[in-house]
Length: 193
Image (tube, rainbow, N blue to C red; front, top):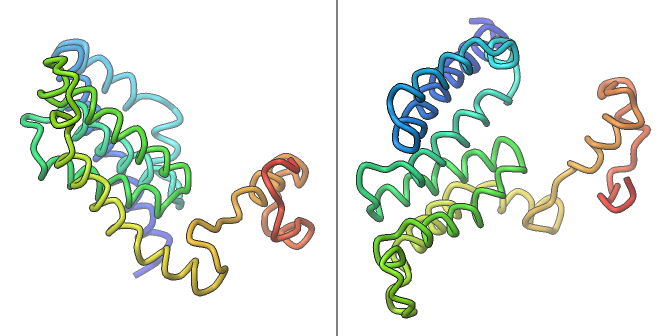
């Protein structure tokens, strides 16, 4: 089949997953009726509709991000398996878009804040959610390991990316990525923007 049509299907599925994860998260945090309103507003948002039809990674990233947050912040039971699945989803989000790296510290902080042992305000290091943290971080690392290997092999740095070049093209290159890609240096640093 057509690769572009397949990518549109992936985006549409990503949109559906994002809406489902939003429902789970909102229902747990604010209740069923407000959650229904939240997904209705989200589903009718021109941005969600537009990106749900685009050929790109935006909606897949949003779906994985939202699903990881839903597993972390609105689980039926906060188990090491839920933490590990959230870690896998967060790692997959990072693979799609580098801002997904934010989910690693956020996930660890969220697990600390909502862990039953911490919520009892015990204050003892032995009551911190070490098992949950380990499951989340290990699963995140497993998910991103292939990219780390490629980055180390090809660029010599585990977290190498050209995000600063993308930002340069958005700011100075009129978002003409195909026409002006060569105009931006491959080693643009964020501080230089």
